[in-house]
Length: 140
Ligand SMILES: [Zn+2]
Image 1: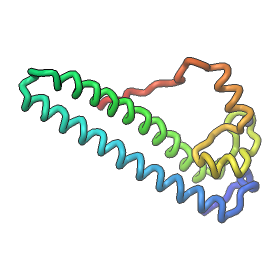
Image 2 (image 1 turned 45 degrees about the horizontal axis):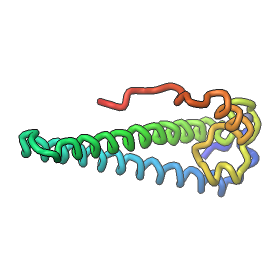
Image 3 (image 1 turned 90 degrees about the horizontal axis):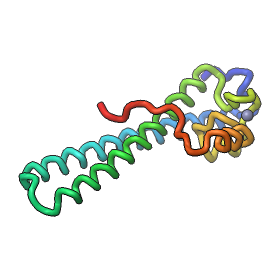
Image 4 (image 1 turned 60 degrees about the vertical axis):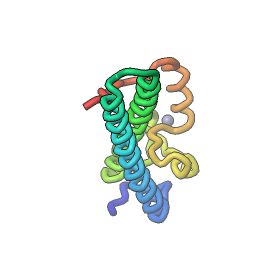
């Protein structure tokens, strides 16, 4: 793997470790998304079987909403994992996208997909409180 000079604060072993964790997390997220989508399909089939009558319908809808919310969260995480993997390929991994300083190793090991140093993350959280940032469609 090519190690950019910007990633000097991480050893090759660190990058291998982080690369492996990103890949594992990506696979887990994809599995979770698939499982949630299968649950929704099952719920739909159950509802059709019921003919839409009875108190079960609102239960199913609430269940579906929860699953959809989980899928949205997983998809967001998935995007950040993929972005981190892309940065790794470009040798820019572990560099704060905001200030350009290296993100400390401990932070990356705790959050392999982190794109900002702790300082910038805190500032970002403070300035955009209540706003989820960019939103991409969660349906398909
Ligand atoms: Zn920063």
